[in-house]
Length: 240
Image (cartoon, rainbow, N blue to C red):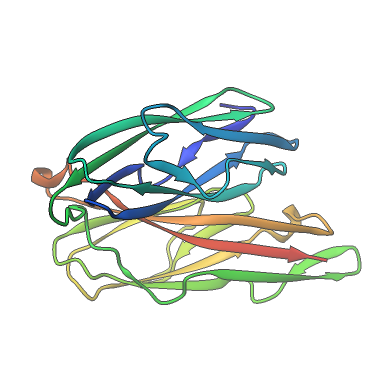
């Protein structure tokens, strides 16, 4: 969609719980337009009894990314449940996200790759004004991850905004961009990434907020249908 909010991005609103338990997943919503957009989110009757958000409405600045959190709460009933979470923006098209809940008697664990160890869980950039220019301190900043999965996985790291680029510097530095990818074959392998802010894209007196998304999926065709694993790394830039 060229105007309005992009469909919510997440690891998938697919929950697997045992009875009387809960789980929370992040959702990132993106304003792809050049104007402020107000939004609200409502769960339909299929999900209203077990799905909730930390907030049901908000306001997105132009090209801003916001993270909200969806929580599933199971009860005594065992089985599969589904519903729809509908996002309505003040500009653009209504977007619907399917939510699924599986409830079992015992602990029902995720079957995707194990999440990597995260050495640094967020980046807070601080900018300063030098004459008429914006200069971001400690730019680029680095992230580091350690693989904990024994099976071979493909990793993909994505920047959701044009003012943030990624570079794999684990070995020989690779060409950077808003999306980089690679593979891990063994547990203990590392990934080091430089995160760079495009200073010329920033405006004065504004706070920028986005999430970098790291997604893992198995490369074995026999496991192709297993759910990927995703983690979000918050990034903020404060411009005076």
